[in-house]
Image (cartoon, rainbow, N blue to C red; front, side, top):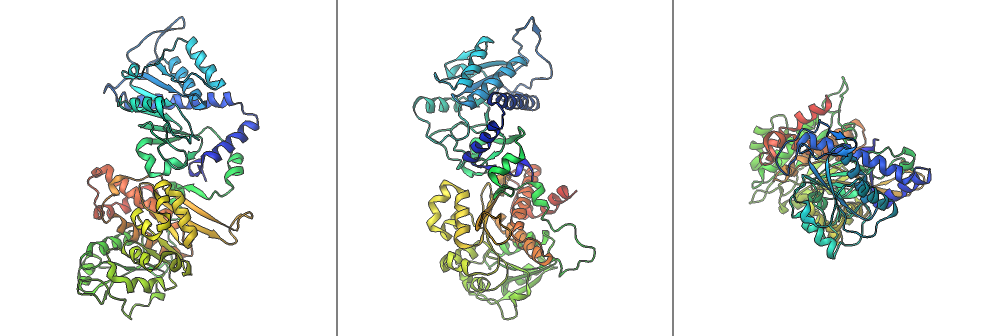
Length: 550
């Protein structure tokens, strides 16, 4: 694991920092180190992008001249406004202001608080001695090229109200690029909730370890582009609080690619690479079956069988000549009524069911739920499951079940958790996994995957625990019909392959979510976010994999 894998709550971050300080690291020394890293990153960002506020690209490689220690104004350097709060986040911001000042930047400081923590006050006093201007009107920030937000750090829990809330709203209305230190001021560290109001940042530099808010959908429009500022937290301190194998992790390229079915054994054959059965489609939603099958094809599955209504079998056969397409009895409207006797579910390594089925396919979905095969369930498969009774049905399944709901489907599946979904997606996914025993892949801008871990693999102190993986990267280009069908097929193919290869099956959910998202990101870069339909997405799955495999 690398530092990029770890995710912490506000309380866990406090505990880790307490250990660092107890070991002898002075708070002031850590503040200097962190602020120095932030200041250098700000300079790199400005050098790379120029001043987006004025549209002028400035050359920041030249040092501002100094005469006898007296700073001179130089228009080649952007004006930086620094927003200072009363706590140590404000102290970080003040050290950043000082360092940027020493590098020749024009800096102004906005600090609307009369009472500051002692260390923060010391830095404010020193900034005044350096003649860095302090301003008390937000209007004076309007000519800045960048604002650095250090009003509030992690751990804020109460709503921002009154004059402070009005000030944040006024700052946002300036429409200037803002870089937030650790978190945009006003965002709850764990849930990503807006506490009354919040800074809308263009960039956020998360300090030390990733906070949960960066993986919560509702915080993303405030966080902007984000990156981690690693200030060398000792691994022993992280392990002491999170454990040697943390239950909550970010999906990284390294962790996702290690569960890809690569390399293949030189003596492998089609049956050792897995056999997947997809049950999908109807006369109305033929495309769903095709898209799921194309997703499965990209997974490298050894054998692919597809059960569809008899009337659309020719279309599937023409699109997927390598697949075994099985025609099923159908209703008058063209939905599968039941699986034919010729389908022996026990012969498949895994089953993926749901895309495009319609609710008329309830008998077919019941059949796979009653089987002993590992199962991926999506779309109408989930809607049928909700009608049958989610928790009792899934709790009784002996085989691995992975369900892939979007938020609306999740609420139908777990109505008792509906409110929690809006408050904390991560907590909702974990609660659902504990309730039903299935692996839950909750779709969204940041996919959240949870399952209940039991047995000998657990640390000694646990009878059971919930494992959660969070995908930190995606693109709104994937917010189109059919994208989820592709994921179902891709995930089903990886699952069947993992079963055939005797690899850890649950880990493939994280790999599939990551791969699907990366394909969307690559496609959007080449075609823009408007040009990534679901079929196009399938064409980027292999190019994406090739890029990372190499």
